[in-house]
Length: 290
Image (cartoon, rainbow, N blue to C red; front, top):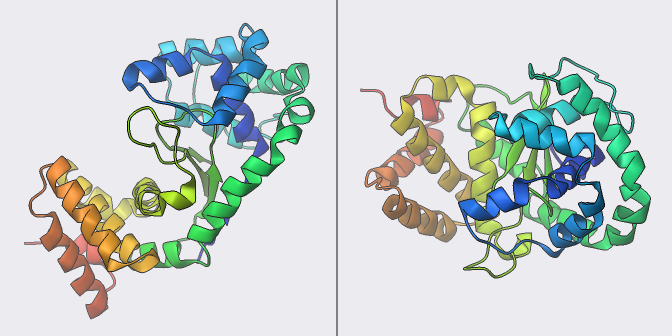
């Protein structure tokens, strides 16, 4: 079975800084006005003089052309640190090789490792420690394996993301591994985000929903789009029961049922539990069988 590692990947953290210097923060505010983590504010101030750097221009051009953030982060993950030499096939995107090469130059020109990140170690270590506490042991992947017919072999890494994107998680992939960048839980209104350990229910449910499309692809492929959404939410509730408690799961089911008009969700969750208890080894695949 694979294990869940929680760490800070400098290649991916550098991409968050490039995003901070790009048009992304303004576009994100247009999607939903929100306060960002203090690190996001400070990083944005630090990289502002480099807003015309080729790495930043490349991000802006890519986003205008509909490139997904997952593809940009995946390109960085498939490169070495700190020179960003590709170590595996990069996503098939126009100018991606030039952009990846420009990341090394951005790191060098900004000296962000020594002039910024080194001065803010404590806040990142605290975020990492909070996630390590929530995901102690292998309970999350054990829970997901109970929804899957067989062992999970993909190497999974979870990284706190205190910069950008601030509203949505991003999954960066290689051939046999993935890294999930997780922003802190958004607070009500325009208050600063909560610390991870003050929103553990959101954290567990979000991580579960993000990982399942990559780890349980065979099960989801058998379902239509609505069934996939139902399965994701039922699985997230199951992870909550295993990682936290039944009350968290029931609260999640109640919120989700109302927010997404899924009246059948509680019954499906109960079916997931029953399928796992019966030990048939394929609870998600069997949820919607006639």
